[in-house]
Image (cartoon, chains in turn red, cyan):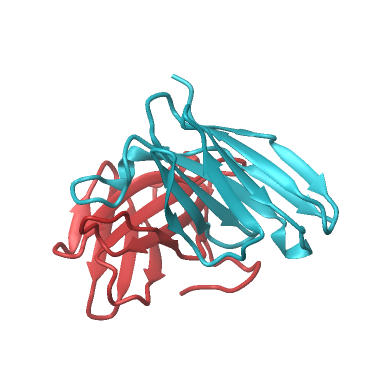
Length: 115
Length: 119
């Protein structure tokens, strides 16, 4: 779920295991969703996106699932590696229709990969 | 290739002061967006510029202003600083406006940010 203030949700996984990071969104008008990874001291880095006309999309070691009925998004990371340790954010926006759209970010989940 | 650069890296100001943050987009990129990231939270959209024109503004007070120069670099200005303005300020650049039909956010790149501390 989402957190408020300084307490990021945390997820610790063993190296080699699969990770699942969840995100709830609230705007019914959002139809484009993105997952970002943010390492300490760096800006967010795009991981994968999904449009609302899809419920699943796969990338390299990552899969995003979208459940529009319950406004829920998840990011699955296969065979989690130490380099995956970071804060992960979901972001949402209404898709473009001639005007630029702005991103709304969630509050993030801290993923820690244990050796 | 150089990525998005921001200056300064860190900055300490006192309440009531003014601050200017700078962003240089990736060469050839014409759109710059600014975000504020308070510790422990996700980035929050402040401004978006494309071809030197403001194309979007988030829910921030008028103390926040920005501009984009002919070389597509950008400045974010914050007047009358408050303690609550302490945050990481992120700049993101893209070739064109992200979010337009057919343009994906995987073509938008973030800089490392400027850490502003207001005492």
